[in-house]
Structures are given as C-alpha cells and as structure tokens.
Amino acid sequence: MNSNRYVENIQKKLSKYFDIETTYSYKNIAFDVFAKSFVRNEKYMASKKVVVYAFENNEYTFIKSETSMNIHSLNRFKETLIMATQDFVKPHGEHMSSIVTGVILLENGLDEELVKEIKKFKFTKSFAFGFKGWVYVRLLVVDLRKGLIIANKRGGEVKKFYEI
Image (tube, rainbow, N blue to C red):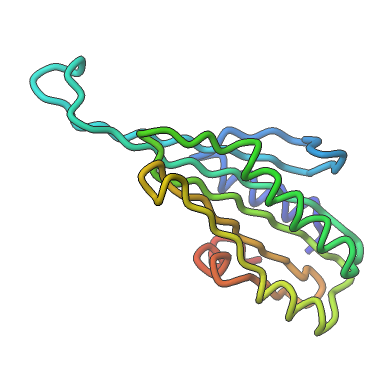
C-alpha cells in the first residue's frame, strides 16, 4: 500500500471523531494530517447551568510520510511531539487528560536500532500532581513495505486502529 492511500484510509477513520487538517505545518515540519479531538463530559443537577463537575479529554494526532528514516529524523520527530505537549495542552481544573499521537509512514522500512528507539520512547507529564490532568505521547511507525507497525508502549493502545 502506498502512503497516499493509507493516509486517505486513516483520514476516513479519524473523521468520525476528529477535526482534520491536511498539509499541516508545525515547527517547520510538514505533516500530511493533523487531527484534534476535544471531549467534554459534565454532570449537572436540575439545569445545565448547575454543573456539578466536568472533565475534558483531548487528543492531537500528527501523521507524516517519509521515504526513509534515520536516528536524527526520529529524534527530531520525538522532540516535535514533546513540544506539541507544551504548545497544545493547557491544563486547568477541568482538564483530565491529553494525548499526543505521532505516526510516521515509512515506505522503505527501518533497521533494528530504530525499532529499539521507538519501543523505548516514553513521555508522560502530570500537572499539579495530577489535579490538573496529565499528558502522554504515543509514537507509531508504520512500515508500509512490510506491513508492520512499531509502537512505543502507549502507542500499542491504538496499534490496531492504524493497522494496514
């Protein structure tokens, strides 16, 4: 499967729950897809004006196509995802969680050293000891040539969604 067709399929899946922007640029990196989702849950009493409690869950997804990858481009992508946690996540009393997901589509495969780097990548941050929520990063690399998906531990949560 080529990357354009894969991106179309993923856009179709994401469009049910996400606001999608194509050809998105962030930190001088051009992404094929940027998708964001905001979910707010409230418990109210008698009237919607009387909110007992509320919480918000947000998710941001960055998808980028590459022909090949080396350790420098992988590190740059990981740093960009970490910067996105600082720029997009705004913790407040009703913020529960935010997830930043980065997906790289590779057409020429990757070597074992990069597989180890992807699997051991981890980023989690809590705000005000968790009272203002937390954020974590999912990292997935889709090897279009072999039909494999390599993910970090958090990325494994959505690995099935991104299957070819």
